[in-house]
Length: 249
Image (cartoon, rainbow, N blue to C red; front, top):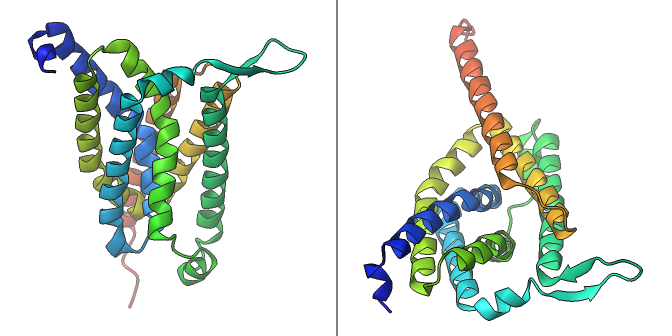
């Protein structure tokens, strides 16, 4: 069980997989931040921890079910009058992509339409149920985890290495989730930007489910560029507010 500890290749795979899990976990953190933001303030911290805990358990279970994961890449059936083969992975990605599109679109509508009156927004969009939020996090994490788990299986041969990488990555996400969530709550435009990321990710998942491979590096570069522009906008708005003369009481 501990033979891998004497192997330099195993340690290199552990470092690579941990970094990979952290990068691929960006999608998960964005989705979790949006969902948790719908809960009452006193429930958000525990929902973040439990949600990421469920995400960790989900990924570990997928790793321990390597035979089932391998079958997801095998053709289930062929679409009539074509040579297109449909796999379990395709179906999971399609369903997950449509779920993200619908969820993000509804959240964008609620955020945009509710900006004028906070009280009216609260009445129009009630707080999400705590348990329902955790279930949504766990379900969508299966979609986000598929590619990373399949990649992990191809990169490492030792189950303990893959499990440790998942645990380390989730620990980093637990540390980063609260600051990110607080930042999004303080800046409404950042929340809309995060929701736009979910729309883009959902579209990419649907494309993957249809057999069109999308390089995630392109998505992450676009997200990083958008975040950079948003940081400049936030800085500019802050400078403008400081320059404005105080209003007469």
